[in-house]
Length: 240
Image 1 (cartoon, one colour):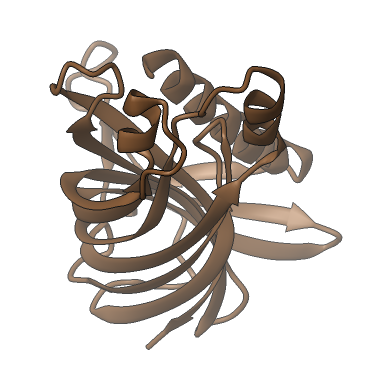
Image 2 (cartoon, one colour):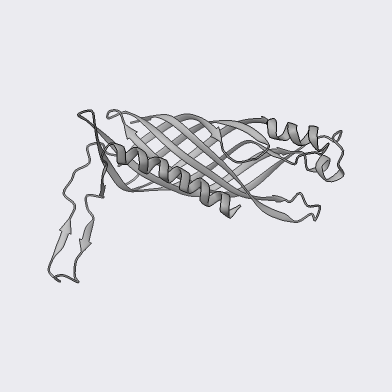
């Protein structure tokens, strides 16, 4: 799981860095930040001079997005997400999220059933909801085709409740006639997002949303193990 997590995080990061590099991104810290150069001169401080054009402080945002679930070797799934949030400062805020997922067994699962006459174990996430603390430490200005696009990097961390459907009983008993089982789990949720402003009110946001949760393992031991759900989405947002 750790290797897959690292690969997904690396892939998402490379994608955003590649997109930014093409259009000559200039990253800036918050306007009130200073840099300590005491090792050079104790009396010197460097202040960030660039101003943000679009503000988040004391603003509510609503996002609706669609994307794909990138976890689960035997499942192809999509997700529809709705987000509601508020920034009480320019850098800090909170957000509540609801996701409705839809998945089915893919051709890999069908091949396992056909060739090996085996039952592939899979969990299909039906949806999740939760709340996150948001931190937005960086913003960018992107120069593309003589047009400036403003962008914020937003990170989230919080709690989620996830619902899923699995075929654990059929897998352990090797009996495809046994019915599937629905389960609910509590977990840790984190998010990496890139928000691109179209104007003062509208924006487009790319998110990698991850929920880590504990559920019964499929080895017949009856013990819990850690599982993860990764959703990559694109959303339209409205700020007011």
